[in-house]
Length: 78
Image 1: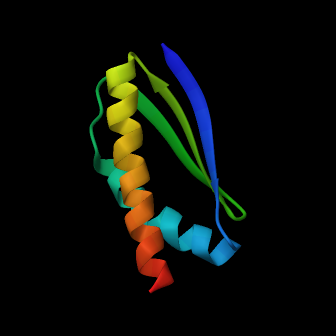
Image 2: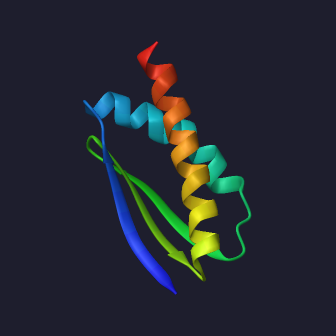
């Protein structure tokens, strides 16, 4: 098992909230089988706590979340 936490800090609470809420739907609907992710918001940080069965599962899960977060942040910056 691989466990870890990633915190992404945004310029302000509002930006973090918008990004978090944008990704939340994906978080709730994606059926991962080999990994689990706790996805939360704390002030100006989006926090991802993960548990994966192997490196491949970890990489796939993190790539998805980081891509969704980047897209949401890019849209906020427009």
